[in-house]
Image 1 (cartoon, helix red, strand yellow):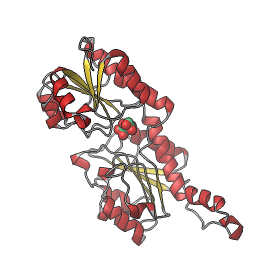
Image 2 (image 1 turned 90 degrees about the horizontal axis):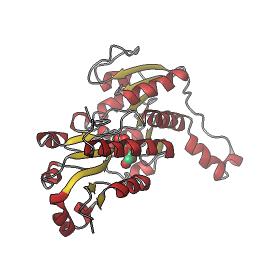
Image 3 (image 1 turned 45 degrees about the vertical axis):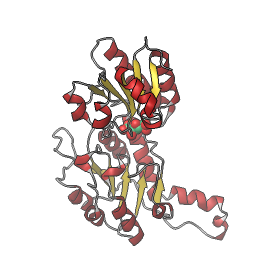
Length: 315
Ligand code: 8YV
C-alpha cells in the first residue's frame, strides 16, 4: 500500500533494480499497476505525479489522460519514442531522458556487431565448440579495416560510432534528416543512396513515426549482396520482413541486430540464419552506463520536485 505522504510514482517498465531501489527510497512507487492491477491503478491514479519509464516503455495519450496530477515522465534511456510527448506537452507535463551518458556504450556495441557479423565471430565460436575445427577451417570472413561505413542518423551516438570507425581506417558517410555542416563526412539525402555506396550500413536514428520502416526492401537491395546491416536504434526503423527476405535470398551479406520490431520476440527465420548476430537490446547494458543512466533519470525527478531546472529534458 502506498504511503500517501510521499510523492507517488508509477513505473512503466520493469526497471533496473538499483534504479528501483533509489525510487523506493524517495517515493511511493506503484510498479506497473496500470498493467497488472486495474483496481489498484484506479485508486492510485488521482495521486500519481510522476512516471518512471524506460527506453522501451509505452506512455500513450490514454495513460497520460488517466493521471490528472501527472507532472513529469522521466525516461531511463535516450530514446523516448514510446512516450506521447505531444500529449504530455498539451498538459505542461515535463518529459526527460538520459542522453550522452550512453553514447560510448552504444557506439561500442555497434562496432562489436560490425566486427562480429563480418568476422563471423559467433559462427567461429560455434566452430570451435562443436569440434568442427578438426574437420577443416572456417569459411573466410570480410575485412573491416578500410571498409566503407554508412551511418543512418548522425546524432551524438552516430558521431561516437564514426569516431571509432575512423580508428579502423574506415571511410564514413551518413544520412540524416538534415545535413550536419560541422561533420566532416559526405552527406546523402536518403538511406537508399547511402546504402549503395557503403559496405556497412549502421542504423542509429531515433525511432517513432518519422523513421518507421525507413530501412525497407529498396534500401536493402541498394546495400547489396556484399553489404551488412547493423541496427542499434529501434526495431521499428527496419522492415523486419524485408530484412528476413533479404538475408534468406542473399540480397545482403549479413546483419548484426540489437533491436527488433516486437521485443522480446525475434522471428524464427532470423534465429535460423548463420549470417546474423543477434543481441537482446543490450546497447546500454553495462554496470557503469546503467548506473549513469539511473543517476540522470533519478536526478531529473529530484530536480523537478525540488523546483529546480531539469537536467535533461527531451528537445
Ligand atoms: C533502454 C534504450 O532504455 O536508451 C535507450 O533508448 O533503448 C536503452 O538504453 C534500456 O534498455 C533500458 O530499458
